[in-house]
Length: 88
Image (cartoon, rainbow, N blue to C red; front, side):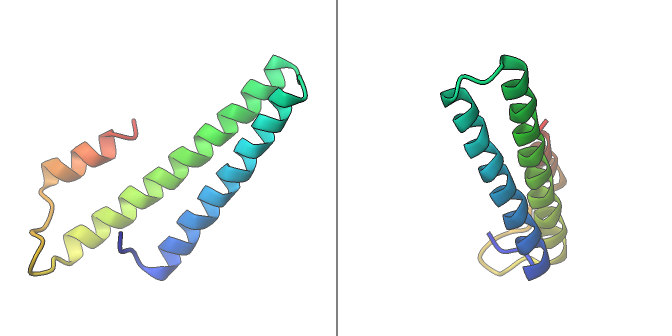
């Protein structure tokens, strides 16, 4: 995947944050924490992953529409929409 450096940094930061949150959820389950607390943290992980996914799709859409190399045809609007909706 090729995205600009700024977007890549933001995406990686979001994914690392989600990774840390997921490790916390695992630790909570192992410690026998209350179900409500676990579910709350799990929802936070899900939102973090959603945000990272949307950032990836948005960056990819911007790049796919702006540039197309000789070997790869540009994505159609339908392909971009399908990719975006895969996150819904």
